[in-house]
Image 1 (cartoon, rainbow, N blue to C red):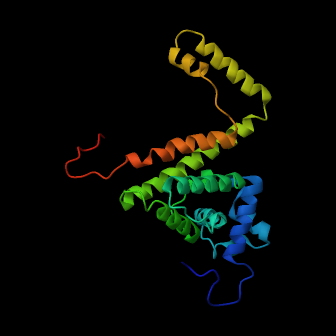
Image 2: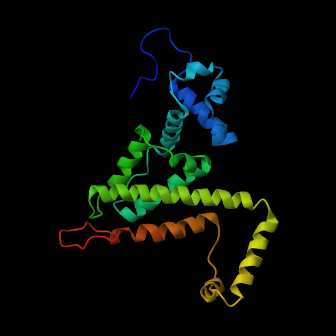
Length: 232
């Protein structure tokens, strides 16, 4: 809510938007650890101390970065009225965003503030959930659950993709699991591994996991006074 530029004094050479965009570009190419106030200052050709008038610390800069890329989710696709379909569409857009910005899943775990782009996307998600007979708190939990699922899944995708650069690793893992399944001590695992396989492409796997998550969300209903207390 602070102004993008100081209201008094000499007109600054930069804007908060430009500095945030530079930080995003740095994270996209070199990873989140490469984003320091000094590195961003060098990227925009500014003195390090001058950046602190736009972002007082790296945590604030990180929150600005998260909300900046969140603008890529806007405007969202029009709602269909089918909350399951709409929620899955939102999740697919979130995944695509995180794959474009591989640092984003890790950054989301540290974010505390909802910026304007994130709030606009949240508003759209809550509108998608309007037909669902749950209270507002439960709908906010669903949004958090969905975003957390997408971030976790994309993080796993990125890890697996990096591991694929070592062709021998996947072969070694398969050989290990086959040996464990055949040792007689893991009958359930042996049965699971013997079942027909499913498509293992990243898109198909994500869609399958997402369907299981979303299709079970309407099993949660608000507690009434007669409901037993949940187990700790």
